[in-house]
Image 1 (spheres, rainbow, N blue to C red):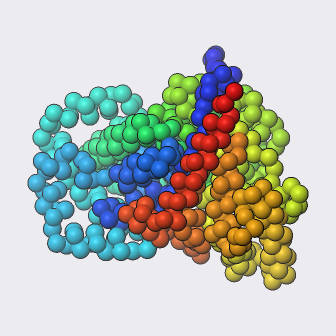
Image 2 (image 1 turned 90 degrees about the vertical axis):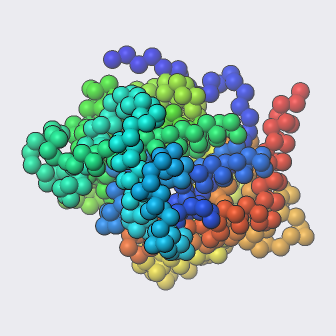
Length: 553
């Protein structure tokens, strides 16, 4: 196999790329008066239109990939069933053309019991994935029945979509077989376990349902990505590091995964016992032997809709920590990957799709990774909470043009919680710290805060007349990022109304409702809040002002 690829990711180094800014919010957390209990693709489109009106051009969210909606399995967007197919949970059913022609579906949606359940889901503070998907699936099931029965003018487009997606029929068969058997694939009879499914192994109507909803998801995501490109730089889509062991990708591509091990991280100062992420790592030699076909497929699946693709744990292009089955993270080992070849594949696909690449390079990062990213034109992440030091003369490292700058990430406390040390109290309550450790952490945090305030005051972002309340410091810090050299500035919307609850507390499971918390305010409310709009307007002014000054002779 010969990989002939550009030496750097898109865009080419000689091109001029404007500085841009955007906002971040998980799609399940984004909700509006019209949505069915949590956000959908239409809500994301409304968000894109709104930020475009304020001058922004990037909308970031968490992975949008296929899930099983099994409460026992959890709903982490970073543990999908596949990196090749999308999550029908985010389909806006009201936009499906079949709804206007399908009497059973329309009667269902208009029934009093359905309306009552819909209002109940909207009123919940947390997303109930299983309950909400049960409701949506009843309608989607009727739409699929009508679609296949009537075979109207859209059926030719659907058939073309199926033909152009060689894995779709196989995926739909797998999902239908999973529903019939109700057990993970490794408990199936040998022929099924090894990938040989016949029409007797699944319900045909269920198979058709899964093919139909993938088509709807693809269509709506495609329309959304086109709208995002018209309004600005496009969608900022997240590519997770792995997939669930009981999912489609591992079942179909068995040889490419190491099913006797799990990916994770070794012990560090934050997680003294290490981390086990509980998904099988890719086999570095097998993916190479197969010409990186699977890697190319999941990159293509994402990049065809993305203006930016964020690669979670970009260090995995170089090495990944493996934990053998039955052992603890303390017994794991780093395994090397063919970094130059994987980077070449990423570069080539990014040019094919005109998609910019962002690498999540936070945590334990070997120097070779950052060197590679700089050389390959892969943008890194500059996160204030990670970069802060207690040195008042140099509390933050210099922001580089290739950085994507933000205050935090979805795995970190919102700025208000960070400023109040609430995350430290959380760790104490979870027995990750003792009382002495909690006191030491709080003292360290106060030193970081003093250093940050000093930096902001010295540089004029926090005026002498301003108090050091959390909102003033947070907005001053955002202005500091907006006026920096970073080509991209991302704003966590929840920071702007001083939320203190994180979307995910790493290291927790049942202790906290991770990946379920809706935004405190719906779209119609926060889009009109002065404390939100005024900050974003000022960020737009600073981002574009810096761009103009850099382009002046």
